[in-house]
Length: 287
Image (cartoon, rainbow, N blue to C red; front, side, top):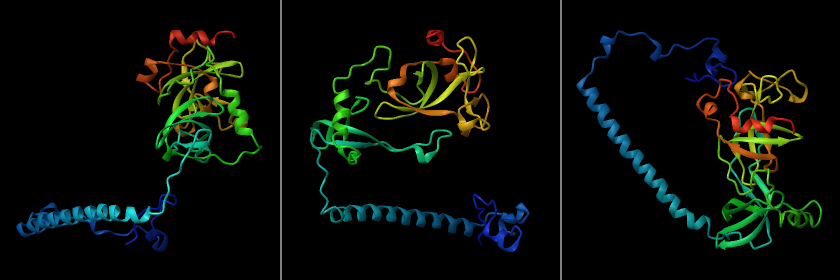
């Protein structure tokens, strides 16, 4: 009987055909006295559980053995990709779904990177040609970069970061961002605060934003979680309360990150408005 409710329509196939909810045996009210244990029933159920458990274990083992036996045949003609110094590649990072982010915009391939050194047979050290961030990865997580739009584009971009040094008032390129880190961000002449929802190998990260009630990042006021304003054009404005799935977020590059910091009162309570740590308020004075 097809009585499972459809996720979108909220109706089961039975309801869509017959126009009513079917009566199921499990829904019929019966007196508990009718469910007295019977010795033969208990013996049968115990034996069935043992038999099924044995069958499932044998099936699992058979699947493992079959996979091992077929691996050699399936990969007989496969040749592992070989990379050399100077190759440009893209690095794979599993895609997540930050709150309120359109999934189709979250790309799991990060790059381009230039291979700087072949460390071992299957490990390489590479540098991002735009941010200068360096990573050591396994070759199974990289693929050749797509063809350049203009000849020499990758080489020109790499030349700009080859001798790049860390900017004194920015987060160092070697700093490893962690999930839930709080970050001070400077962009377009103003500071703001975000929390890392997902960090990428090129140094960028998806940040969820916080702001004061007046929307001006006022250090002397309490700070709230920011949400998208449905009535605002292009979603540029925000409100302090809203649907958790409509949190205000952005993909922020490492060049705009100033420093990470601890926010103990916010970590203990994520919904209640709280003041910024005293040491961080200095960023929100006049520039």
